[in-house]
Length: 269
Image (cartoon, rainbow, N blue to C red; front, side, top):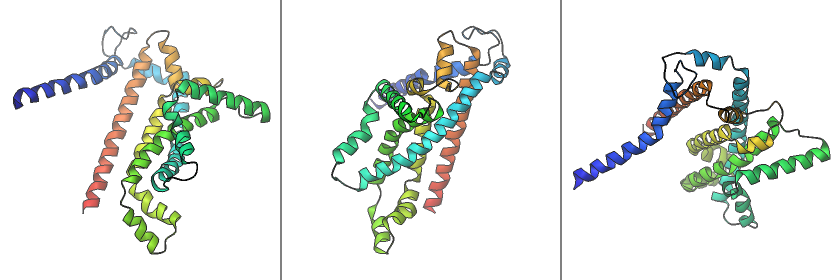
């Protein structure tokens, strides 16, 4: 019975990977299509990549999204790390239920509700003090709030798995809790920090709903720009942009795996 079961597992795995990756490979292939019709192959060409690099609106939106994603991921990682550490190490304190409820709220509240509430908040603040206008700051604040909860969950689970004897030994030798955190805990959770940052970066870069509520004139992010163009019909330039994103992400994943493997090998030596 092992043979048939092994064959069924391999078939199911192959169908799953095909379902996930055939559309992506098709998109990459059609980014080299000479025809302006994205579903009709007429020959191999790089012209849509050239057209992409002459599209100032698309490139500007991509650059804005990358900046916001980097800033939001960094801020969310800093805040979420402290939040996750508190959840994992401080036990139950006064107001713990409210704290964990507020921290977990972005995970369960629909993004539409978060977007509307943050938009109303910024409108009230702008009415009171005349700042901020909808733009890069408001988008960054919304993305940071949304991504922080995901970072906290990752860091909390990693900190709970740590061997507390290392931290206790450092405290017994006279180190302050803050020094223990930065010299002992932080290096040990560095891979989780990298994973949390990458997840927050991806969530921010991919977000449409919050950006739609919090963006302003002249601050159109890449997902909004692509979404607005796709609604009018698929464009080959979008295929070319997606292919470049896939290439960049693939290179980053391979590089991250290589660095983690090197770090693991050093740790075993």
